[in-house]
Image (tube, rainbow, N blue to C red):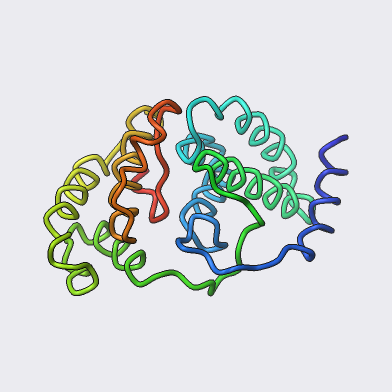
Length: 204
């Protein structure tokens, strides 16, 4: 099956997906994975998107990116389809790496818990205070530790995927704890090389 046939089938399928509330926004149209996917295509730098998938899934996503990029650079309607095709695959592979199901990219405006939005804001500002009052006091000490670790790794080099994925490990650990999950998601996926974040993707 060639890329154009795949794109046409994907477009036809989009209308049939059921939109369900998301517990975070790695799979929303305005979420960080999708934003990074668009930036990767616009810049031609696959690394901006590759940090969202485990190291052992890179071999699946990279050729998808390269095929999509060739069509994307041609412009027009085909470019829009190529972008959507790549984004769907990026989020699908990312979700699979989390052990999560995938039912399409959720629309802008999909509900996101206030803790997730506050965690995004905290890392953007470099200050944990936006989460104050949203997290139980007995959890605050551990939350600060995870925040500090993520913040310390935030300024990674885009082309250093090991560093980028190290940040993602710390980031998802922080976000999951902010959402109320006590386990360390990154450790659960250590065999894959890194965890995944649901919030903003850091600096590039």
